[in-house]
Image: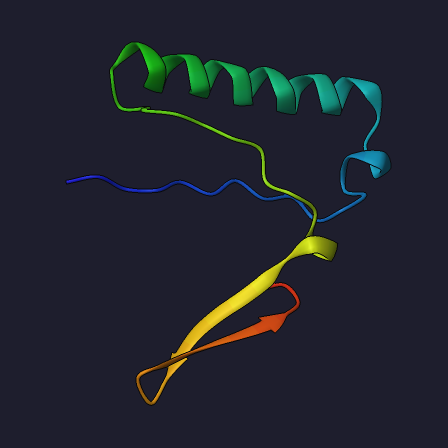
Length: 72
């Protein structure tokens, strides 16, 4: 079975953090990423585009409905 992991921060979240907090957060992120790569759990990873480019796809009554805007 395969799962998808989505890691998301609000835009500007890191701007409100001091340098030490940013470095600690990124250190935790890189350590986590390395552990799942080494264990074979991570297949690939790509950065997400900003929410301003988001499109929502839903299915209503058996038809695909595409709307502009983020899912969050």
